[in-house]
Image (spheres, rainbow, N blue to C red):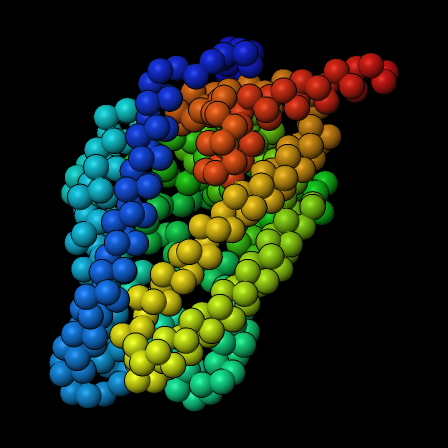
Length: 383
């Protein structure tokens, strides 16, 4: 397999790629609008209070059980409202030949996703309102500290607990490639606990790779759609980028950034809840009918911070790219892999600047390829 056969770096986006990404953006906006309208409607109409009362009756006035029932109803209603868009997203992937997943398999994934989301949300919400009841004045700072611990724990457990719920993994059986990737990881100063073949082709035709987990669960996962269609040098280039995140401590830095944002979010949420109680919207802070108000607060904050967070993410991605340039023998495999990934995943190589700023956590493919070429020219000129 030769990486010289990949599309030219100057290749433009196909009409198909532009249409696919435009529809995906519209789908994301529509999903946000429907979800936001649902939360606002719950608060404005008083439906949240009615749902709380129903949960209290079904839960025999037991606060913990009633809160779980309320959350279940809330997530179920939200899922029902968004199911049409979810199905449209599934059909969209099929229409553009990016998915080979059956309707039955998709429905099963949806059911599993709902149940996993319910369990995780229940843990978070029960903990949240327990702290509100126990410490009305300081709940937000205590809960923030606990949440950050849970966040780090989840990052460590995800590769061994969550991912296998939706995908199959098996140890990489290509010993030569495995050896090359292990050596690449050792040069980056990270000990990889395992390299796994990710059976993504059972559901998707897209290609991907990642360095996942923390500590003892740190592992490399390579989609079979990548392993079967890319040269070893290209796979090495893709992984070198992922290892660049480790070298530049992006995971640690992202945790610090997330901690700051989460602290700000809890502080604002505390202010909003006290304001709502003072205005007699709720009798007390622990009235879980105010959960939609908390969700609205966090959503608004996320939207306001999204451009800045995307910019920070793109900065990290450029640093990881630079590490990849320095770690591989030639940037040619990096360039070819970027173009092949863009073609295989129907990514936009040249999105408009405002689309990149608002929606993209990675630099445009065209910019990444141009950076690789510029680095290669600089290296050649210095010889």
